[in-house]
Image 1: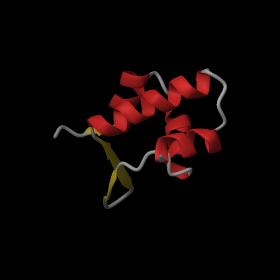
Image 2: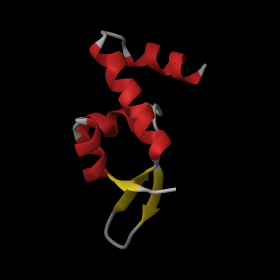
Image 3: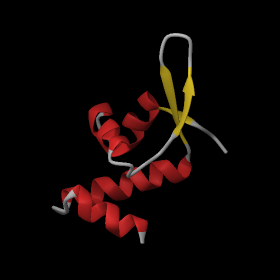
Image 4: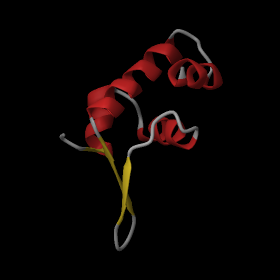
Length: 74
């Protein structure tokens, strides 16, 4: 399974890094994290990308993050 870096994910989804980090903080998406010497690196798989695209579509339809979390967790 291919893993994507944050920069790639932003380009693929059209989302900002700030938005993706918010979704990570809200536990809407949980990419793999690796601790480096100087910072943490996050790696996203195809499932994470699809989930982010779903989140973006639901957000643009006017749904709140709490509602999106409930929908995606079911």
